[in-house]
Image (cartoon, rainbow, N blue to C red; front, side, top):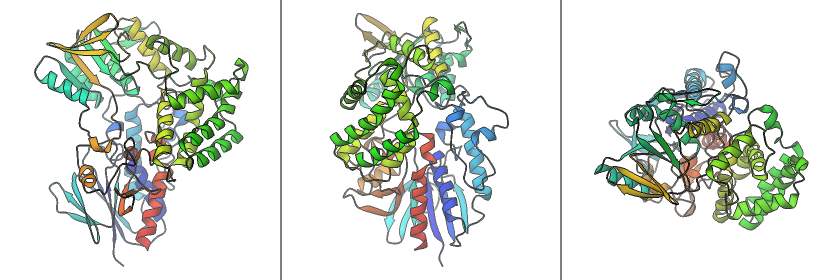
Length: 542
């Protein structure tokens, strides 16, 4: 009875979720198994996004009350709230570093006693995997500074690997190299705020106006000694003179409802959730047109019920949805400043919900049903593209920041530290000292641009091993031009001909299109991880 060998490459929270699922699936089995986990980074189990070393002002966009990543059976760590060891405010948003410390505690517990009811041995290998080669007996891993190793099963949980800069950023890099202009990345946030100490009195632009932008703003203000109170923002004189965020549409995301009471207004009924689950199940096997009308038909009655007091009709909701499917975000016609103020009023309950805001909150509450219906199925590329685009588009409502973050942005604008005049897709010209942002009849010179845009999961732009080589060999391939890697329900990779590649699996955002709603903490510990574990156990027991 030979030892089965499994390699997990990349060990942030996605790898942790997969390994926890494997521990559950192996419980009570007697098969000898060696599991090697390859992670050169300093925080195995948490990864860079939840690094405990990151500043406490980098917040999750989920309040305590909505965090439901239950530890595996037999874990001694408990839930995130229990692990805190003190009462938490359910409406507060924890820091990502704190979540990282919790994930590290789960990893330590899993390595210590998670596999005691199995015949599995775990080894954490702090090495970069340079290449994978397919052999008759499995997969050979070629490593930096170690001998190659052979495995029956390989799982890639790579998170978001480093990518080639997009054309705009590459152009700015060339410009910065020969001028006084400076470029920086939003993360690691601890590095950014150290750099920012040198930008006192300078004008700084931020590319992107999503969740990361709020972390960047705190790094440029609070981390430089400024502080917020009920009156507003109090400067330290160490921050930049002015901060100019910009994006393609200039719209800040809508904050989440301020507390449980307001959030309960958007709670779907059990019967509505069942109808939605059935609609998703039918939509994933339908044409794009039928799929969108099935989803709309399940959403419209819920939103109509929630907005009953405003006399919003089902026809109005369906009309809003029809436009959203064809041109996501095109109905948001307010200026960036109006959107910010309106978002704060919506999230604090000072104004009645709009169709878009209500829809976004319902959509957030249905993310589990959405994933459950989509992820295990083989969805036609055209339909997958339409469904994924709809989910991604609604993130401006469903993945919003805490209300406190939106209020901080407004306070910084009121204090003259942030200016949204150039937020909507400004023209950007290169100058001797940096860049000039132009909007209508105004312009503003900046000497620093910070990138706060998360790269899209475009497989062709990844520039670190081991994926580029697997793609060159045709072993990993995108579903279509606009989507990421093709995988089966259990994560098994499909090659360029659509055939399963034995013993090679991939989980996470690099499979967007095969799976949906991947940028979520909950997805890392959900059914995708369990389906992978079930598949692996079946194959090694054969």
